[in-house]
Image 1 (cartoon, one colour):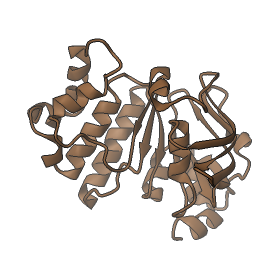
Image 2 (cartoon, rainbow, N blue to C red):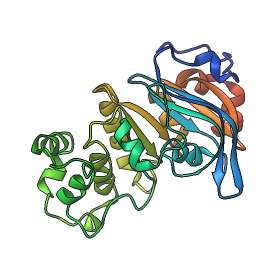
Image 3 (cartoon, rainbow, N blue to C red):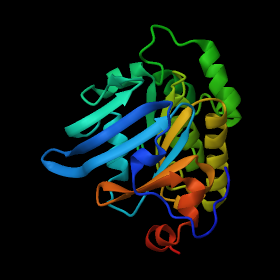
Amino acid sequence: MTTPDPGTSARRDPAATAPEDAILQVRDLDAGYGDLQILSGVDLDVGTEEYVTIVGPNGAGKSTLMKSVFGLTTYMGGTITFRGKPIHELAPERIVHEGISYVPQSDNVFGELTVRENLEMGAYVLDEVPESRIEAIYDRFPVLRDRSDQKAGTMSGGQRQMVAMGRALMLDPELLLLDEPSAGLAPDLVADMFDRIDRINDDGTAVLMVEQNAKQALRRCDRGYVLTQGENGYVDTGDRLLADEEVRREFLGG
């Protein structure tokens, strides 16, 4: 990506940066929980093999948007399409079949199951779990091979996050949804986690991520969305968002 001049303004119009090869398209989405509406008219796109980050202040609706893509909120209006197919009224178990996997922020492993059993749960929709998929995850996260028989609940935070991501990758999804992957990790593990996400994206999996570590995430992603009070604020390349004085002042701590 080309680094913009410091004065470059980030864009407020999501359509202005929409990729031509978008696999995920969110249009005018209204969603929330029960009768409580959180999102209002939100637009979002993720292109083929693209890395997109959603940032914004607490309570802006970032995780709600992520969960809405995976069918975990109350749909109130608008559309969500994946590969041109509407998915906004599908249940999560149906959305998995479409090629989307989701790693929640917390409670994202089965603590009483071993690492291998957790990975097998990621392929529960298959009649038989291919050994090649287990080996592919072990190759990506070698520490999991060494701890294959260890219960996931006894592992460190960083190792549990690897288990959760490995399980989500068992079906080789086209789009991986990550909700706050660095949350709860020791500072020296955060960069390593982002490096792993970079490699997942480099290998061809599109990534849509909500992240509290906004500056770090925007430095690495292709495009970023800033949400404010459940609505689109800014959208542009990660570099342009980082360079925009207003975005830095209002959302990135200067």
